[in-house]
Every structure is written in C-alpha cells, then in structure tokens.
Amino acid sequence: MATALVVAGLAGAVSLQVARERWYPAVASPVDEVYFTSGDGVGRVALSFKSVLADVYWIRAIQYFAATRLKGAPASRSDLLYPLLDIATTLDPAFNIAYRFGAIFLAEGRDRGLSHPELAITLLDKGFANNPRKWHYLYDKAFVYYWTYRDARTAAHWFAEAGKVPGSAEWLPGLAAYMLAQGGDRRSSRFLFQQILQTAEHEYMRTTAQWRLGQLDVLDLIDQVNPVLDRYGYTTGSRATEWEPLIAGGWIRGVPVDPDGLPLIIDPSTGRAAVDPTSTFFPLPDEPPPAVRPAPRPGA
Image 1 (tube, rainbow, N blue to C red):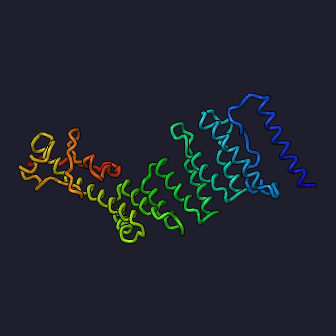
Image 2 (cartoon, rainbow, N blue to C red):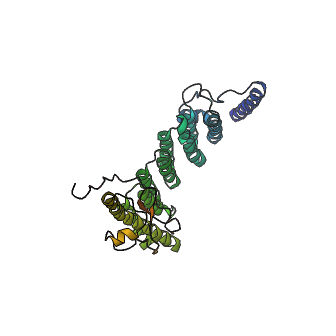
Image 3 (cartoon, rainbow, N blue to C red):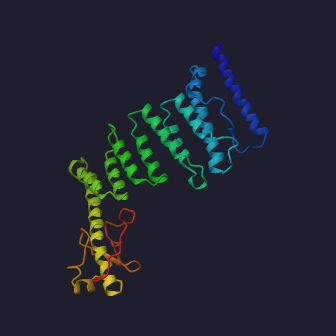
C-alpha cells in the first residue's frame, strides 16, 4: 500500500510539473529553492527510491545550470547548483555522470563570475572517495586546476596521482610530465619522461616520451642561445636576424640545431631563438617566460 502511494505521488508530481510548464511562462531558473540540503535527509524519506530521486535532482541540476550559466539569467537565491549535485551523488554514490559533468558545470562561467572551481574539486573528491577505482575523477580534477586555475604544476600532480590508480590509463604519467614542462619544471618533467621511456610496455608510449625529451632538449638549447643573442645585441647595437654574423664574430661555434638536425631560427620581431615551425618538435610546451635580466654592456 505504501509503495503504491509513493508511486502515485511521483506520478502526480510529474503530471503537475507538466501542467505547470504548459500553463505558466518560464521563469529565470526552474529551481528557486532546495528544501532538503542534505542528501542523507532526502535518502531517509526516499525509501527504496533513492536512484529515482537521484535522477530527479540531476535533471534539476541540469535545468538550473542551463538557466543560470548558459542563458545568463541570475539565480533568485543563493547558488543551488552544488547542493543539487551533492544531493544527487549522496542518493547515488556511484552516479558517475553527475560527478564528472557536474564538475564541468561548476567550473564553467569564469568570465561572468559564475565559476566555482573549488566546489568542482570538492565534488570530484567526493566521487573518488566513493569510487576509489575511478581514476577519471582525479584526471578531471587535474583539468580543473589546469583550465580554471591555470596551475600546471598542481595539474601535473593530479595527473600523476590518477596514474597510480590500478587499471588507469598508461598515458597518464606522460600527461603529468607534459604538465610539468608546461609549468616550467623541466627537471621533473625530464625525469618522468625518462621513466616512461624505460618502462612503457607499448611502443607509441616510448616514442612519445622520446619526442617530449627532444622538446626539452630544444628548450634547454634555446635558454643557452638567448643570452648570447642578448649580449650580441647590447654589444653591436643591432639585433641579430641570422646566425652567420654570430659565427663569424666568434659568438657561437656553429648554427644551433634541434635533435633532428634542423637549425633553430631567430625570431625577427624579438631577436630570440625559436624552433623552426617545420620542426617535428614544434610547437614547444608553452612555458611562462623566464625573468631575464639584460646583460650589461662590456665595460659598463
């Protein structure tokens, strides 16, 4: 009897919602208030319908996201996106799509001040705590740090942590190493790529590691050459545009080349060394520019 009443109540609620949306105009947000803020509280009254209610809260979260994030309509009360997602994932702790897409929803809207990356990370931490074999949550967490916080070093840490989960993708350590290169930590990046080169089971992983190590070699070479170009410019009063004058003047012994033997170029707009766009190592990882102090003129 109790089960029949619950089913009838749910059916009635659906019918009323359909009628409401047909008779009344759309509002800014289809969810103006969450009467239950605790998933455990909702679970106690849901009886055996936790999965059904989890789906309901997930749908409402999607509606709320569409209204307040995609359409740009302001929420009439405090932000309800995370409470809706929190309840959905408490009712169904294995609700994979709610964790992963919910985190994307929370991290969206940075340009309009609507992003909550800290809550996206909280949701993903909850997902991994409930499903410790799902390395995807740590992978998604890394991307939140990379795309929202622009923190390549922390992103690299979480890519590496995802790679430690049994059964995780074998390319995760390589991704962690690449993030370290993006963040400017070449020594750690080189170490990780060397480990992949020595231990990877698949050839494409070893080939990729070798290529990334070549990129790091190019970055190191550029760092050696740029100070010479700077000194040449300060000494001669003109910016170098090709290597021959530096070789003739004894500034360098020969044209610097990448690991494939292709010469580096001098960017005419900056006077700095760069990898040739036709090089197999192009483009290089996007590193933050180093703080370079101009070299003093001789005798200054």
